[in-house]
Each structure stands twice: as C-alpha cells, then as structure tokens.
Length: 349
Ligand code: MRU
Image (cartoon, rainbow, N blue to C red; front, side):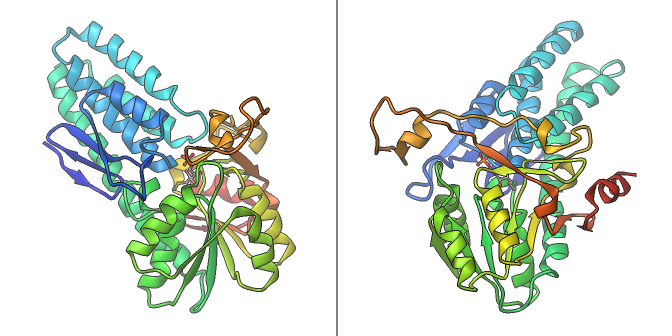
C-alpha cells in the first residue's frame, strides 16, 4: 500500500485527503475522497486547484476507480475505467496536466490488462498515482533549483495567482523558484497579486508564504503597474496551466496584463512549469481552451454580494500570454529561452 504526503494532498489507506482550498486561509478543513466521483467533484469545485495538483488528484481518482471496479470481469472493468477517465477529464478544460495524468494512468491499463488480473491492476495504478505525486515534488524542487539561479540576492518578485505547494503536490512551481532562491541563501521578497475573482493570491499564496516566513506584501491586481513603475519589482514569476508548442502560455486570468506591464517596465517575465504542462500538440495559444467559470465568482467578493443581481458578467478563468512577452520558461530540465518553438521542440526530442 502506497503512501504520500504533500501540502495539498495526502494518500493513505486507499484514501485521498485534500486540504479544502475553498476555505483557506480562514479555516483548515480536509476533504476525503474514497471514490473517483469525489475526486472529480473536488477538481470541479476547486477543493483542489492548480495544474499539477489537478493532475495528481485525477491520477488518484483513477486509482480509486480501480479499487471500486476491480471485482468486475475484465470487460466491465475496462468499460467502467473508461467512463471514470471521461468523467474526470470533464472537470476542468484548461490545465493540460489533467489530461496528461489521465492518459498516463489509462495507458497503463491498456498496456497491462491483458496479462494481469483486475486486482493486480489496482495495485499497479495506485503505485503509478503515488509515483506521479512523488515525482511532482521532485520536479518542483528541480524547477526551484533552476529558476532560483535567475533571481539575485535582494530581489523582489511579483507573482500572480497561486503556483505554490497548494497548486502542486508540494513545494510549488513559481513559489518553488522563490523557495529555491531563498534556500540557496538569497534574500527574496514577494509581492502577491490578490488575483480576483477567486483570490488565489490573497487567500492561498499569502497563506503559504507567510507560513514559511517569506517577506510577502499583498496588493490588489490593479496596483501591479504602479508598483512596477515605482521600481519595486525585479522579476515576475508565475505558473502555467498549459504551454503551447510555440511558448504561448495559459495561466490565471490577469497574467497577460502582468506580462504587458512587465514588458513596459523592462522586468523579466518568467513562467515556471513542469514538462507535463507543455502541450506540444497545441500549436499556439489560440488553440488552448479557456474555461469560463460561474458568474457569481465575479458578482460576489469571496461570498459577499457586491453588485446588482442581474448585471451581465464575463468570467474567463485564464488568459494567454503571447510568447513574445515571456523572458524564459523554467522547467525541471532547465531554463528555456526564445525562440520557444525551436527550443521546446529540442527539449522533447
Ligand atoms: O483556477 P486555478 O486556481 O486552478 O488556477 C491556477 C493557476 O492558474 C496556476 O497559476 C497554475 O495552475 C499553475 S499551478 C503550479
């Protein structure tokens, strides 16, 4: 029986325990998944969020599905596992890590089912999900090591949304870069955008950075330009939900505005992401599906109604930063610089 413990999730006794991110930082409540439907709900309802954390949760979802269906005959087992994969894949459309993890889990079934019993399949799938989660932590540490070198002692970094331990299994991508730099002995300060409408920056990034004792200042999103203008920011580091083959990058809504501002002020704009976030099948940012979420996220400010009930709302959850606004993409395999189409191709060879 496998075991795994990270900040966002724990796998123990065939259960997935998630810290319920809807309530942070005011309450620390945990959500237990004992079946794959609960894993799907936890992704859809943002109990767990952030591209790599979504991927790992989906992987555990497939392991849970296998434990649910491994008393069936092989034919039924395969059918039910296919349905579980489809249901899990319908939860959120933008973060490619979700599909990456589901494909990795399902291809194991395709490869092994002929020669294994369904119960043996469950053991294998559980092991694979634990591997995905453990690898994620190692990958983030490598991203931290590679990206930490790009920051100078005394730098102040602006980040948007939450690409931290909560958005991964542990350690984080963008916040991993900050952690990596600090662990190498540099003094780094952080400005965190609050990240309307869901407030991942204010609620989650601030919470986890303050727990680590990292000097963090919260600003509202519309302050980023002025803060840059005042010379307070040395680098921007954000995560990604999907990076197209040409380097165009989908990340939390507002990232594009931050990138435009960074360009205007001559500040490097870094994307920190694992290879599983790079989707070489998606040619450019135009092909990335952008999730539109519930309009109440905009009508309400963290559950408090602020506006007329019938106001028209547009709530895209992500935007795409064109590759020409990106200084470099920090991965576990190194720092990728422009031209991204050429250099990403080389990375996957
Ligand atoms: O809607 P969310 O909270 O899932 O969006 C998360 C982000 O946009 C993160 O920046 C991204 O997933 C990278 S997480 C390491």
